Image 1 (cartoon, rainbow, N blue to C red):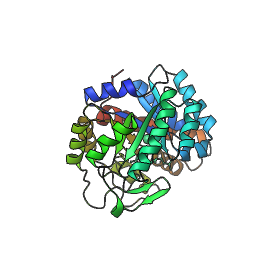
Image 2 (image 1 turned 60 degrees about the vertical axis):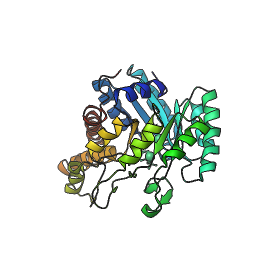
Image 3 (image 1 turned 135 degrees about the vertical axis):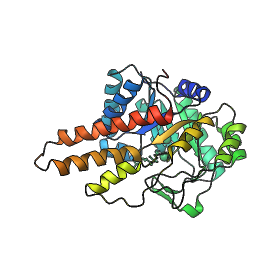
Image 4 (image 1 turned 180 degrees about the vertical axis):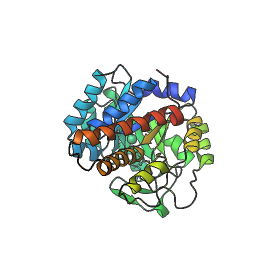
Length: 308
Ligand code: G3H
Ligand code: 13P
Ligand code: NA
Ligand code: ZN
């Protein structure tokens, strides 16, 4: 069934594991993720960005997720990823999403609180939960380009005040991750001291980690081997994600790793089978690659297998 994340996060917090939040854009991605979750008996969050809604049209994604829910009795959260204003959050809430993110992290502290509170009031009235973000991730945050230099990590005391004043259900924090396939110039490094402080102050409260793809070298290499050009890509090492789940991180966002897996499989298929022009063949292999990536994440990184 379609559920909110409230109960899922409680169990994940206590069990020190995380729920995977996977970005969805089309049928093959949704099916690959859901097939993996079924096999691992894991709850999942399917998240839709503004770009995904623009690409697939909102009604199509909603209906595809409904079809996935008919296909399984797994708990599935339908979440808006990086909602930039009240309007898009309201639209998704009215559309039947069970969770929305209001990302006002690029506004001032007070404006972030004000906008988040407005979304929380509307959402809670309809039984929908809200994620907000405090602090800035380095790199591209949807349309807002925040240079690495200006990236500001989440202040632990502000996090407490933010949660108290907004009543928001979960909080995305900035501790050194960033979106996309180029997360670190040198060695990967996250501010675990800061995370521990935040999780100590916000005892029992679910935190969210964005920009949490690992950018597995074998998939980058496969892309590059079959005509791609993705040099210098680097993500968050898996042991850091496992460690984050020990300190209150209950939701781990993954998009880039799905993109890499699907692209690697499709590139390989098109190269190895040049006579094929049936999209089902390469899209089917792309879907299998998504499933394998999500199986790996759930079983070996998130730790949410058999947690129903
Ligand atoms: O945070 C961004 C997600 O990876 C979604 O990306 O806005 O290109 O759909 P998108
Ligand atoms: P990645 O780019 O690391 O997959 O992060 C995705 C994300 O945070 C979506 O909100
Ligand atoms: Na999100
Ligand atoms: Zn994000």
